[in-house]
Length: 88
Image 1 (cartoon, rainbow, N blue to C red):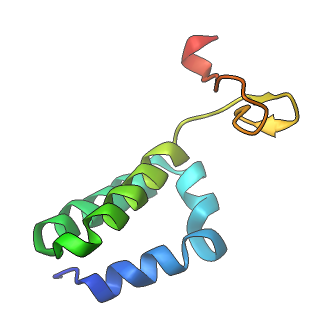
Image 2: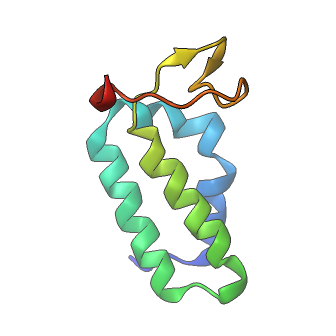
C-alpha cells in the first residue's frame, strides 16, 4: 500500500482521539506506525516534512515511560527533567 499525504493527515488528525493509548500500550503497534512514517517520508513534499518528523517523535515517545514529577507528567510544565525507567 502506498501511503500518501492524505492518509498521513488522517493519522495525525485521529492520533489523540483514536489510537494514542494503543501506541503507549503496544510496541508492535508503534513499529507499524513507524513503518508508515518511513514510507510517508519517501513521498512527502518538503512543506509537510516537519509535520512528519513531529508525528514520528510522538510515536517514538509514546513508548518511552515517564515518571510524574511535580504534578506534571514528565515534569515538563514544572521545569524539572523527565525521568525514564532506564535512568532510575
